[in-house]
Length: 394
Ligand SMILES: *[C@@H]1O[C@H](CO)[C@@H](O)[C@H](O)[C@H]1NC(C)=O
Ligand SMILES: *[C@@H]1O[C@H](CO)[C@@H](O)[C@H](O)[C@H]1NC(C)=O
Ligand SMILES: *[C@@H]1O[C@H](CO)[C@@H](O)[C@H](O)[C@H]1NC(C)=O
Ligand SMILES: *[C@@H]1O[C@H](CO)[C@@H](O)[C@H](O)[C@H]1NC(C)=O
Ligand SMILES: *[C@@H]1O[C@H](CO)[C@@H](O)[C@H](O)[C@H]1NC(C)=O
Ligand SMILES: *[C@@H]1O[C@H](CO)[C@@H](O)[C@H](O)[C@H]1NC(C)=O
Image (cartoon, rainbow, N blue to C red):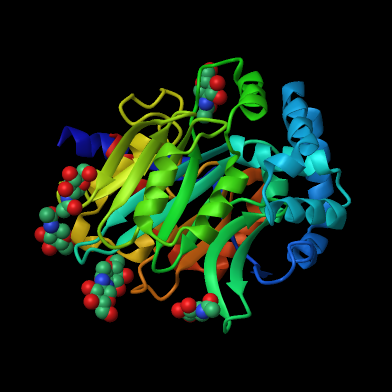
């Protein structure tokens, strides 16, 4: 009773709260990357489309990152021949010349992409056993520009019939994969892991110079192109020496999902979602799951509350996870895209994504009004979602 009164009291404020934000979505363009084409030309068409924003992005990064970043990228560029295997070596060269960006800056770009991504990943299993894999990619550096650099990549092989090998939600200039689905095999998303170590960049440099470690932008491509078994990829993700701690979120779509918490040289912990686990979902952001979320970043707690309170397993549909990823602050002003995928061949769409822009409304007053006129239901749906979410907080 008390709760209900409180709820009615705060209702007007909720509308106020809602009216402060505007969530715009945009479809992604799809580009085809032919893995049977020469690595010196397979990215050329894509990169030409993105040359201008890519150059601005790199310039902005150069002025925003600490200098050890440059040492790392230059060290890798110098050692490219020994360090980066073919065909990725040639791909990096060709991206550099197509975009007219220095080789070391292409490497810098790839490192920045993989080291700065703050994300939310969700795995959920429906009562019929299908695993849905969702993720928001949040990026706090030049977020608007990054939205312009995002596309869907379809990696195909043309010589042996025309077959799609895997899909990725991709950033222009990036060689590696952060959100990728190989139908019938596995889907993978990668979240950055926070560390308290202030010497981090120097450690990465040391790791590259002295140890057999690998940046994700090479590792992920090697996995998706050379590992045909889920068990093998699982083993690699748990054991390969990396340049930075990270979370891997992986599922085979059929009977298992995993969140692997990685240190640089080994695996710190793995949670398994399978039929022996009473849970039907896992949420991972950028903090170890055995710790509380920090007070100023409750993305994981919020997503878990929404899944646990608003939904039950029998109601899990493909768009459920999208809706959970659309609740503030899981969706926030740094969210670049939301993506839903599943490697099971029972789903009609193997990967689905939208560019997201959650921004302060004052800038978007007119747009919001036009949107409201165009689609009343979706607006009302959003209001309902907000009220329900606020109910959880009461
Ligand atoms: C996928 O479909 C096949 C038949 O097409 C069925 O045997 C299997 O149980 C389904 N798997 C899931 C996870 O729904
Ligand atoms: C061609 O692709 C099929 C699957 O589509 C595969 O079974 C076969 O081994 C491939 N052949 C070669 C020569 O790669
Ligand atoms: C679920 O995963 C746990 C931990 O790896 C394992 O012990 C258990 O056998 C698995 N259950 C099934 C049904 O595969
Ligand atoms: C939370 O606070 C920490 C420490 O003040 C800060 O570094 C971090 O950026 C904050 N995170 C968010 C999402 O505001
Ligand atoms: C889940 O939701 C459905 C439909 O609303 C309902 O019939 C079912 O009893 C619920 N199950 C649980 C365990 O709450
Ligand atoms: C299993 O559940 C998923 C998610 O709700 C749904 O998309 C899929 O069509 C279902 N599969 C079957 C065979 O019913």
